[in-house]
Image (cartoon, rainbow, N blue to C red; front, side, top):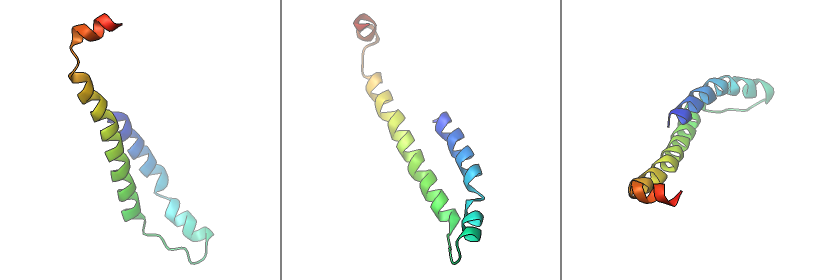
Amino acid sequence: MVLSAFGAVIGLGLAAPLPRLLTAAFVGFNVRAAPVFLGALLLVSLVALLASYIPARRATKVDPMVALRYE
């Protein structure tokens, strides 16, 4: 989750000037950046949380001695 938080901060920092650039490049282009950015941030954060939580939960159910013997 720490890596996904760093990625979110970097991504939001790089995406911040994007609406102004798109508005200048395309006539009539109108974007509400804040809701789109927050929605994408929440979706990516939820996927990262599930991607790390599910394997971690499964790993806690395995006996450590069985896992060490397997290797």
